[in-house]
Length: 465
Ligand code: FAD
Ligand code: SF4
Image (cartoon, rainbow, N blue to C red; front, side, top):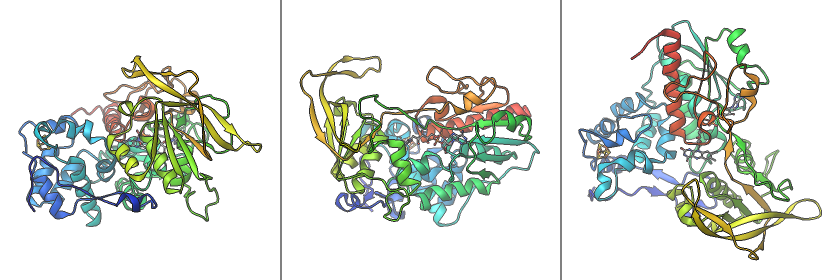
């Protein structure tokens, strides 16, 4: 296969017209020949900047070198040293601002497609039944992990490799956190990708106890003082949605993006036989411009609605990944930019019938560094719609901090924990991921889970590398 060293080997995708009507994965990934060709673009740098850009420091240059040689098992071994969820990360990490953003090839041409190569190796390993990691020799110590999202799964996996007996307590009926309930199937297939990666964590001996809400079913103090756990890791995420507090927001047909996506992904609301179907109607308005807004918009589109994304700044300020905006546009999502809802209008049965929207213009930059949106007086108009999905961000649920003696949170409700080892204000309790940072990314949550596993190991065994 001929390779232009300045350009990436293009990755195959489902046709936008076809995929807009199905929930199958959009990106089809590289085949063997394409992966080898893309890997051949890597310069195997002596001082690889890509590794510095990866929050879990995967030895990227080394695994790509193994792909070049055709040693995919060895490539999987190298990735497994640093990441327990490579098929997930290869699909959803914002590589453009991390490893690929630092790749030397990017100075003159396109960076190496590191994410797509990671995904290729992880998919190959799964399809060939190859699993590299092994549990450590039991050391007789028990750790409880609260939350089965990427931070909890990573922390649990790393502790199991060190010989700890680990139980994850998860509030929902399925493990995976946002990977299962938030990110849609068309970006991250559940049966084919997420569940096998969770099974790999279980293969290390990690137990997962679902339907346990820590803070209600059992408290952190009880786990430590009565259930014999030597330490606890909190990876409870940031699942509490924010709203605008405008009139009409409590009407039927107004959802938080979290509820909308959870009902689709976890409770399969898109199926006609669903016990809890979602009424999306003919026209849906999504408020917000982040990645979660794009996921909600593209899901509503697949449920048959005409979809408008209403965002108060301009395209340049859209917080969503460029790739997500590009995919959304290709599929036919309409972007109503520099516009802001001021009221949700309802019918006599309190169902949404439209949104009153005010147009905006950009002023001087605000504290976030982005230009401040300023309302234009007299510019209001009504956009008729059947449902409104609020996607304005999330914060951590206060349940754990309010039920755990001595555990402190900051003024944003985030658990206070040290970045280097996850240590909280309570002895024996560690935390990481969105519960500490607020809504962030999968790889940062994984990095925090790893750091906390090391911190817990040092606390319980006094071991240092
Ligand atoms: P979570 O994934 O939120 O997991 C926390 C888990 O803890 C959940 O399973 C929850 O049920 C459980 N839990 C909470 N409270 C309790 C309790 N009291 N007792 C027991 N269990 C509890 N990031 C990316 O990098 N790329 C993307 O493309 C991307 N897309 C996203 C799309 C959506 C729709 C959303 C919502 C987020 C997205 N993110 C993305 C962000 C990313 O998913 C999160 O940053 C990441 O999942 C955080 O991991 P976590 O382990 O900290 O928390
Ligand atoms: Fe390869 Fe780019 Fe990393 Fe260099 S910086 S080793 S070219 S991926």
